[in-house]
Image 1 (tube, rainbow, N blue to C red):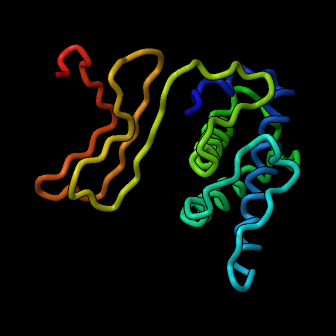
Image 2 (image 1 turned 90 degrees about the vertical axis):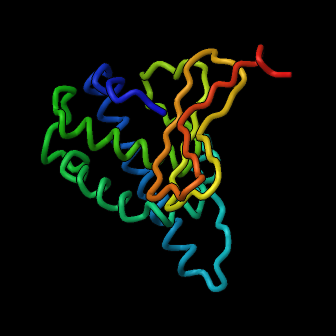
Amino acid sequence: MSDPLSMANLSATALTEGIKFLYEQAGELLKRRRDRVAANPPEALPAPAQAALLPAPDLDLLARFEADLQELRSDLDDYITSRVPVTVSDDYLLRTAEALRRVMEAVYGVPVLLPGEASQPAGVSGSINADEVAGYVAAVRTDRAQGNIRGTTTVGTVRKGGTAVGVEVRDSRRRR
């Protein structure tokens, strides 16, 4: 996952280019979703050339987050068309762009870094988004805690006997 403050550390030019990149990539994802829905029968479509450095998107997650992508992309329209200037002090812009980036990270399954941003520190991240859990789920489960570990768990209902965990670090010294 990305650091919400990292965009604020970019220059205005780098931020402008980063916003354009996120906006264009979101547009490509939405186009891909429309093309897939229009295909009869539905089929996987080739990734656009622009997204060559990103892995193939998870099409199920793309369908799930389609409305979020549309709304967040729409919220950036005034910045893309220069009706509103892009500034690193614009809190609304930074929050909107970061929200768009997080949705894209979920769909692509990898961090989405903008030009000029420092690469993410080594570590592990995982997320779970479930309507219901009846057994055990963990976003991240590991035998040792090294580097950055981030686990996000969003669950509607945990049934009796169920467990939902963001991060579980098992003590490997206690294993038999």
